[in-house]
Image (cartoon, rainbow, N blue to C red):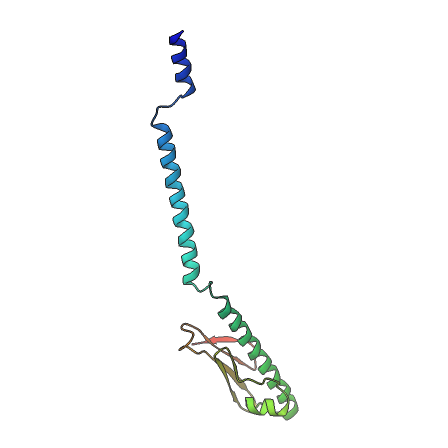
Length: 145
């Protein structure tokens, strides 16, 4: 009877006493790899600037301002047969902007009778790595160096 109990006990644990420790060690290694991958992923997000949603919102606002100014230039051009400066756009009523910039960006315009170019200059001193943007009579906003 004692022999039968030893066999039953041996069948209840078909692996040796070191097997549970190997399984636990394997689980710990897998968890460490998963944690390292998680940290690496979120560190890369921060490095690419995805953690700064305010700057992305500011850039969208700047691009929208450029489009609005370009549309005002078109309105002014149809009424006066030439393009003009930002000051003239606001004084004529073609543009209702009260500020000459947004969140550190400053706007400037170059105009001739047949073309215009509006630039949103980036404040690199306060926002390192930001881009300036420009729009012209093609109505396409472009990033400029």
